[in-house]
Length: 258
Image (cartoon, rainbow, N blue to C red; front, top):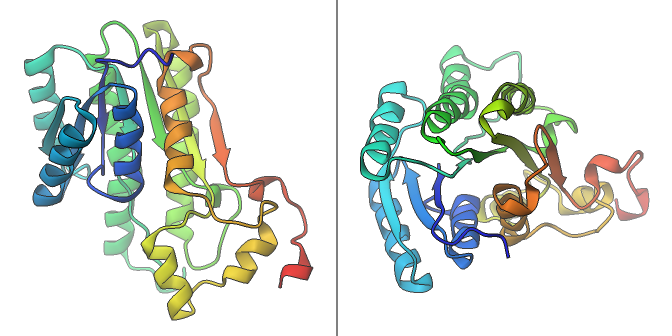
């Protein structure tokens, strides 16, 4: 129904976590997966798992999204091999926590080069291959609007992704390229579970701020991305879809959950 069978979908940061869940979501629809990640061994292993688990074509590419040279190399190879690209998912990203008064220039550059610069130049490279139109889905974050202390550059980068999504959607509509974003809320990942265990993050505080009183599963994020990348979202562009259990809609937290 989503008309994704055989469509070429390139996913950055796709070797594990949310990126791999997104790849699995597109694979369930029969898409041809172009899986990229900076971790060569993991991305090849994950591509093999997609081929064996879903019976789809899945190719692995080593991509450092912080490097325009690496972006040019990978997208150039995709263009030479296949000629066109149908969907890009800008998933690669990092988070570095530190107080704003002590955040280093080196960490600022590292985070921005991956989260913001990488997303822009991957989108640019993808658009040049979308000769028959296509869809770009950027992964933003609920923290772009529901800010959290100690994460200023991350929040800034994800707010930038939202602005980039809107302006590229306006520019590229004439090329029949749709550009949208998904902003996840709190997701049950190993990183968050480790945060609970170490006392860095409070599960009770999260539930107080989320009306659904639970964390998202990675598949719930993936489903939203697949929708925006599919023909079912053919008239949707320039939007950020918050998949956050109502976190962005809640005013005062539910203090009964504290």
